[in-house]
Image (tube, rainbow, N blue to C red; front, side):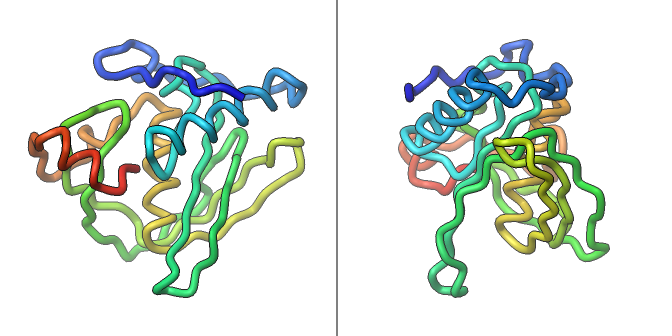
Length: 169
């Protein structure tokens, strides 16, 4: 495993629609392991393959909310697709490892259903709610060349120290 460089705006890979994964072999396994290590080192709570300059439809998400009774969960999802959104939305503050020093308020669905595959090609069907649903929406947007700033209702520049202290999506 290795920590990879995270690309930042205006790198063109961040605006490109990522290609579907067809091969679940050793190269994909290395990419997922590296993405997990990179996300943790950043630190962040999610990472999409385009953020490490790989234009493939792969995301990793790590989430835990002890106060809400949600145990630690690590997701690696290949070819994820949001197949259902709740009508209920909420505005939340997001940041991004690929847009350092910027945060913004983004309106997102409160609940989503995601289909895709695990790292070994087994089908996944996830129903996600709250903050983890927001993280998934943010990361799947990356796979479509969409940045949180494209959806933000408010954006502000913050000191790098403050941005680093936030839970970044």
